[in-house]
Length: 183
Image (cartoon, rainbow, N blue to C red; front, side, top):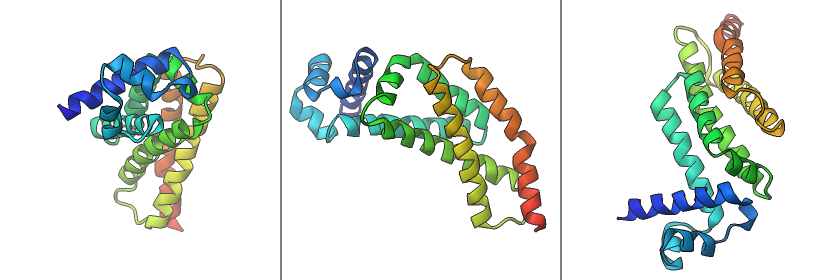
């Protein structure tokens, strides 16, 4: 029953977030929409921001589990979620808690880039510190591209944006790691 209640709370919250700014959503709004009492909400979440954080964490885990090292498919899936909840993403992006969305993007990008970089490093002698540096570099490239896409109103076709990133990463990560291994 607890999982069902949490899912209902998350569904109500996303519905509300698609309708109004994050800063305007209250626990009262969520419990009224969901048909639960405040105590039930607070049993599961500390506040609205903790709820948003958990939704982002759940989505991150889902993409990593579902797609493993396939960076392009994972990002396409994540962008699909963003498009399904376009207004919600804008409402978070333009809120005082924008850093939660940015942290989510960094978390997703870091986990996926780490898997991808480690896969590309197979058979090479590359230290952990170097692997981490390459991961961080590509993570920032991805997040920067996504933030620019958000700032431009999500106008560009997301598939095109992600596939272009994939084309850039394809081969370049391995070449970078090979150069590091040679040095």
